Amino acid sequence: MKKIAFYGKGGIGKSTTASNVSAALSLLGKKVCQIGCDPKNDSTRLLLGHICKETVLDKVRTKEIDEIEVGDVVHQGFNGTICVEAGGPEPGVGCAGRGIIVALQLLDRLHAVTDVDLTLYDVLGDVVCGGFAMPIREGYATDIYVVSSGELMSLYAANNIAKGIRRFAVRGNVRLAGIIGNSRNTPGEKELLLEFASKLNTHLIAFVPRNKIVNIAENQKQTVLQYAPDSDQAKVYFKLAEDIWNNENLTVPTPIAFEELEKLVEDYGTEN
Ligand code: ADP
Ligand code: MG
Image 1 (cartoon, protein in one colour):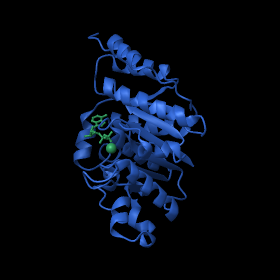
Image 2 (cartoon, helix red, strand yellow; image 1 turned 90 degrees about the vertical axis):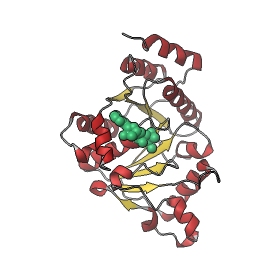
Image 3 (cartoon, protein in one colour; image 1 turned 120 degrees about the vertical axis):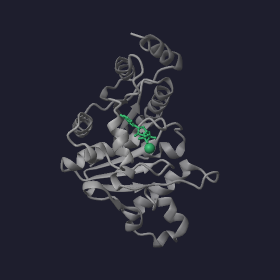
Image 4 (spheres, rainbow, N blue to C red; image 1 turned 60 degrees about the horizontal axis):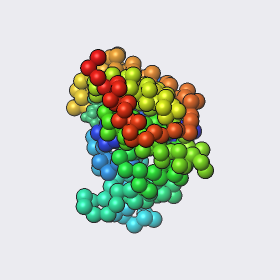
């Protein structure tokens, strides 16, 4: 079974890309489970067709732990995809990272995710605190993809995630599996991402164009794979799903200094 994770800055497009990849993999005949590890709870919204109202942490709050059943926390999404949301604390109370730990441990105890070809953890990567590092640190996910645009702060988060992977790669089998470029149409973006990936000792596995079909599909609570299966954007997600499935380019990353990151953006991000 493949165990992968998508990390990246909040709002960069992790959940959208993850859901489209999960949908594509399911259409390619794979059994996929997507686990949202972000207190926003919206990772699986496009697969489910609605926001998940039964997160793992909701159940922990409302039921005795021994009474929680697999069906309480595991939901069926598009084309047989399995959807789970870890959930988060009430705003202003408790620690979101700690919540991820509790949720993943409970899923283990329940043997909630079995008989799948691929599990995809969709993880908020602004803060690589203990909780959000859990999928990397405890070997839940081994192949880590970082979603980034050409914007400095998104690259900054990507570089930080690479630092976390490097730390845990020393004693485990966690590896950086590639950068997924999700375009914000910044100047020189693809070339910048290619160079950034190469400096981090990895590859740019995809450069996903910014396209309003993604937003239109999202407004209908659907992935592009459902809403516009014959579109060019759907083809991009299909190709990415295949490339992820076949990817053997797994490396120990070599993160760079912030000044080097700034220089990259300065050099590539010009008008022409
Ligand atoms: P994250 O999970 O990283 O917080 P989301 O996947 O929720 O981010 O995406 C944030 C917003 O960006 C969403 O409204 C989504 O529709 C939009 N978006 C993501 N990728 C694209 C894209 N390639 N083209 C257009 N809009 C996109
Ligand atoms: Mg998300």
